[in-house]
Amino acid sequence: MELKCILESLLFAAQKPLSAHELRTVLAAAAEQSEDELVRSLKKTPAENITTALEELQREHESAARTYRLACVAGSWQFVSQPEYAPWLRAFLGQKVRPPRLSQPALETLAIIAYRQPVTRAEVEQVRGVAVDGVMQTLLERGLVVQSGRAEVLGRPALYSTTQGFLEYFGLRQLEDLPAADELRRIVVQKPESLLTVDPGLATAPPDPAAGEPQATVESVEAGPRNASSGGVSEQPAPTPPTANPEEPQPAGKE
Image (cartoon, rainbow, N blue to C red; front, top):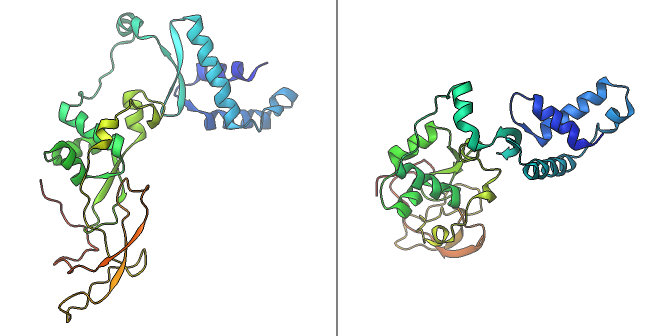
């Protein structure tokens, strides 16, 4: 009995999509409950072998041209019907109430986040050229975007990234399946000034207020979104500290 056939039976009976890890857990549980040598031999099946078997099964279903196919969405596998049979399936099963479609501004904002993540709201506004406060709130409420951290720059603005719900909404297996958007990535975005620290990770070290000019230089580490390629440490004069505490998040205004 082939592994792909066992996986096919599990997915056929499943009430929800299953990931390779979840399928591996089922194989291990079956081995614990059975004395059959074949069943026990699959107890420690690597997740990579399961994925390979599922991809082979997917190709077989595609070549068979059945009314359904095996699909992987957001890392989980399930059988889905072919879209051309939707009219009859809707008449038989009824139509689910779906949330309203995303507006054009929301789609544009979501595309910028998807291709440049993690990214701050101010950077999104620089690319779009308009404020995105309301649009960003909509994306957060729909579970398509999530706050994934804070940028190591003045004001510590929030960073935003897409969620697994984003992959499910667009039927993507992973972020690498997004269409190419080199032009979007080439848009130059002006990043805010980095925090000044004596050592990376420590609190800001402001210059001596009694001195008219900065007397020393400190290491500045720029750890904003999308600068993993630079990762360098530069020597620069310490600027005059801002009026607000740079360790506290500052509300970003509309551009």
